[in-house]
Length: 78
Ligand SMILES: [Zn+2]
Image (cartoon, rainbow, N blue to C red):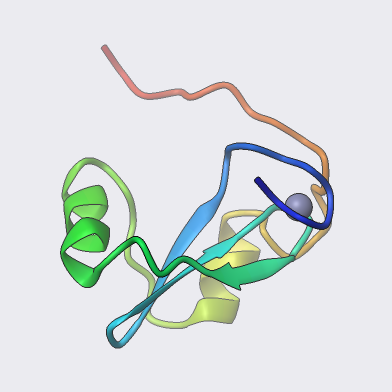
């Protein structure tokens, strides 16, 4: 759960070498020690996107704080 805005989902997962960080839509970010790079790669394989830079990803995906508190329904095709 995000300690800043209380969101419980719709986070962006960031892999910084071997450290996994979570970024909320309010732009709050924290380290998630229970996740490993293998978990991250599994998420990417499962339909996530990998981006060359954190800022590009944050802006492209709407995690720069502009959408704080906003939830989207998952458009994943069936
Ligand atoms: Zn938040």
